[in-house]
Amino acid sequence: MIAKMLELFSKEGDISVTTFREGDIKGIAPRQLYNKFGFVEGDLVEEFNYPNQKFILKR
Image 1 (cartoon, rainbow, N blue to C red):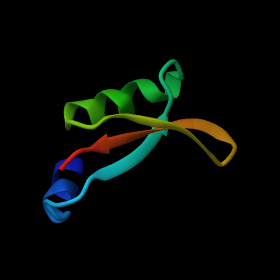
Image 2: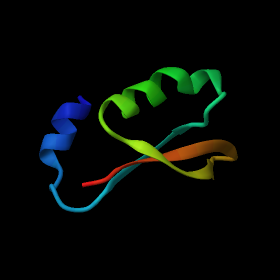
Image 3: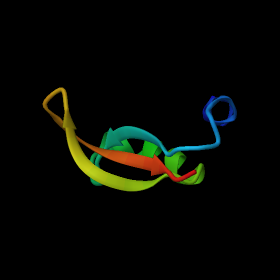
Image 4: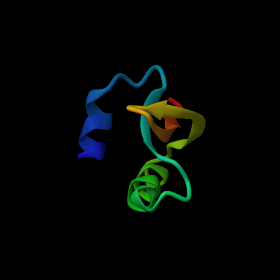
C-alpha cells in the first residue's frame, strides 16, 4: 500500500508521516516499515495527547 501511495504522490516535495516514538512497543513494526521505504526520523511531536515522531521521505 505504501509503494502504491508513493507512486501516486508528486515526485516533488517531501512526504511526512507520524508514528510512535522509538522505545514504544507499538512503534516497532511501523518504524521498520517506514525506514524500509527510505523515510528518516524527524521531529518529536505529540498527537491526541500521545508522544509520536515524524518520519520524512526526502524527494
